[in-house]
Length: 385
Image 1 (cartoon, rainbow, N blue to C red):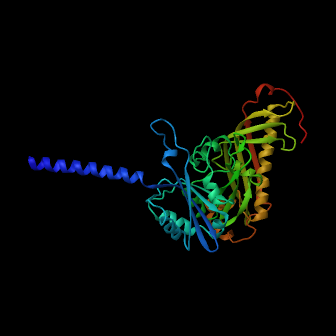
Image 2: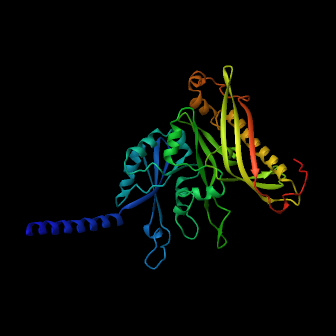
């Protein structure tokens, strides 16, 4: 009996000692929250963002400490070599399980992502779910930009892009595991959002307050970098993205707008049709929406509003397709439809330079229902385009 009691007592003491050690270790670890990658002068440059725990969690008095953001820069001959260079000045052990954002420079994208993927997926602490972005800005500036009201970058689109995307779906944010799936998928064109810093839109006590914003996207296909395009060039991509939640459209055009339609609950289907030795594609677009704003003192029937909205969506999709032909990029992922549904034909056609041409996109059919349009829904007007 005494022997059993002694064993239980020793086990309890060991448990308390172990718990105390774990708490001490957690308090003294470096919690990495974001990783940036650049490639310059034949070397990988690694940026590590850390946030002070006091600026994330409230104290007993209910107040947060002023935001503390540390950004480390190290370089190495390989991607992982740069990590080991960062360890030299870390002072405490790094914990990588809380990394929720990865930022890649355009030079890193051009260099290729095989080494980066290999490094991030080989070490067990890195999770496959961080958001992934590209940028033309200095990465240290992106990682150092904070949120509102002295909040850290955890409260920005760098770490939480989905909340603002639900209000205004422009460029789709994407996580590392989804991007990797698209990146390695044959005949698939993928992209990562481009982050920049808006220095003028917000003021804090009449002083400029920099804020992160999406300004375009970097495209990759066949595991190679294809180029950067601004959001103004890519507006049609939101109508082809399943993740789109809510997107506005000025109609009949931005130069002479009459009303603003906001579309949601959209569905897109692409149908390949074999015609001889080639394929042509039809796109079916379905969406509901509302008329959010009448810009001029004119009126228009709901049916006419729906017709202008259809024309606006179709126009942006066709402009995106034409941009793809000019830059040899399959923005609409038409070839991937062949790979999925006509694989044997795709094997025969994949090496043809003119697999997609100006006649490949045969038709775009749009069905849009505007559910309500406010107090002016029954009035009439003729809109001049």
